[in-house]
Length: 132
Image (tube, rainbow, N blue to C red; front, side):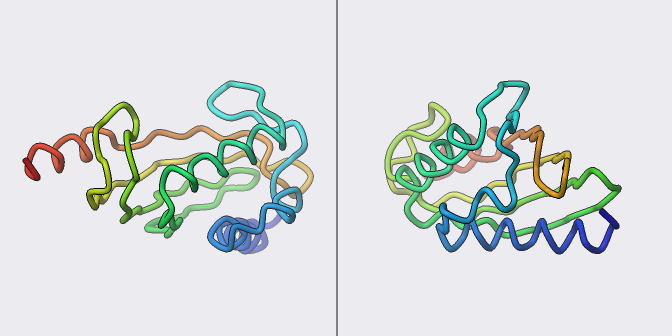
């Protein structure tokens, strides 16, 4: 995939997530996808996303920064949301938080095959201390 095509596919993938179009997820995610070095497959990946949306009903994936070096995409995704209960072991319980996720994706055959993800948990912890 060329750089522009890879970025376009990535943006369509994020639109799929934001529309909760789980039936189309396989267009963007490989059947044997690996997330943070754990083989989850498309089914496990979808279950993870569905769980995230259940826990955070207003979850929206907004790109802050994206860089492409085929077959890789690097992205910083900004979140502004209100998790319903515990989130990453933190007692958020419906409070609004802002944080980022830094993600690297490796594409294979035009779809996401590997995902390396790190969420900025210290940013959430700092906000929760301020909200007390």
